[in-house]
Amino acid sequence: MEWIVFWIVIGVVVAVAGAVAWGRRYFRHEIDRAKRIRRANDYGKQ
Image (cartoon, rainbow, N blue to C red; front, side, top):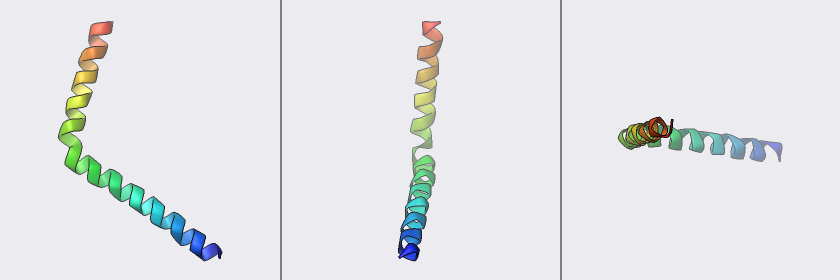
């Protein structure tokens, strides 16, 4: 029984890590754009 739980946990960790890696690769441009917008907004508030 413990092995089933172990493999489920490992599978979830691998799936999350893979999703994050895939998202960073394909959405890097959008992430950089959002950071620039956020920085511009923060600079305007000061």
